[in-house]
Each structure stands twice: as C-alpha cells, then as structure tokens.
Length: 112
Length: 113
Image 1 (cartoon, rainbow over the protein chains, first blue to last red):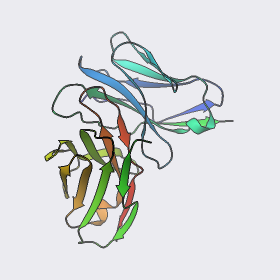
Image 2 (cartoon, rainbow over the protein chains, first blue to last red; image 1 turned 30 degrees about the vertical axis):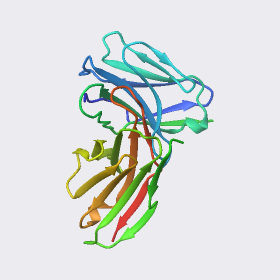
Image 3 (cartoon, chains in turn orange, cyan; image 1 turned 135 degrees about the vertical axis):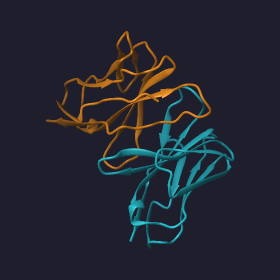
C-alpha cells in the first residue's frame, strides 16, 4: 500500500470549514483513498473514501486531485466534537486481503 | 456501532504469562484485523485474517499469534507476555475485498507488569 504524508496537527475555529490535506504521490491505479478519525481513545471511525472522483457524504467531502497524488478532507462546519486524529490511508482493492495501514495522522483541534 | 465486541476491555497480567484477547463480530464480515496502538506510533497492524483459518502477518507480528476457527471470532494470543506488549489493542472487521470500509471495536487496554 502507498504511503501517505499528513501534517501532524491543525487548528480550526468552530463553525469554519476544516481542510485536512494528504499527500499520496506514489498511489497506484488500483488504490482507494480512505479517511478515518479517532476521537480520544475510541476505536477509529470511518469517514469517507474515493478512487478518483470527489465524494460527499453526511460527514465530509473528499477532494482528490486529477493526478490522484493528493487529496483533501473537508469538514464543512467543524464543531468541538470533530476534535480528533484524522488518518488518510491508501488501500489496494485487489489481492487476497485488503490490509489497512495507518500512519500517524493529523491531530485536528477545533476551538471556540 | 457495527457488531464488534472485544474482550476483555482491560487486563493486567504478569510478564511471561500467556494472554488471549478475543474479537467477536455479528456482521458475518470476511476480513478481521488486530492492531496495537502506542503513543507516537499510531495504529500498527499485527495480524489479519481473510477467512476461516486464513491469516497473515502484519508489520508487528513478532510475539503474537492468531487463530480464526469461526467467521465470527478472531483470537490474538501473546504466548509469553512482555512489558513491550503493554498497549491498547483494536480489532477491526471489513465486509469484503475492495472498497469496503472497516469498523473498529472499542479496544482492549493490556498492561504487562
């Protein structure tokens, strides 16, 4: 699975959009981009994933560049409850088993 | 929450003793994973399973073994616990190959003294 690079930490004011970047310059054509988050000491929570088109769900939007070498997770109106560590992961869709390999993520702090 | 239960949730054990952690799912998902999480390291994959009796190693498998005799249960065993295995352990499940998202359990906090 391709490696990802994320900033270690970011701040965002409550009510503003949080834009979390991820670089995955070695991504292969058969790899999806996934985002998870981990709030305090809970288990990670799935947010969204995509292959090459932009995606949106009730939690967030995912913007993937045309060359697929980077992506941005957007939380449109961040709240204090969005304070968490956010993980960007690339994962192959073929093979015997789909490993899910985490990096160290971005710690997002949402403030009043 | 997806139907994943980890047991025990907390355990303190002595160095050199065997320990087994259990992950139980009610989703009939094919894939199951064990991770450990330590400060400064994020989540690291220990072992994973892609079906009954089908398992493979992750990046930090030394000192750990796993078994999956039924779809719903994935056991992680520390044959002889060491202090370096003090960690929080997470189990995850995934429904199918490809694009399926993974769901995580609430974690087991293991302390080896």
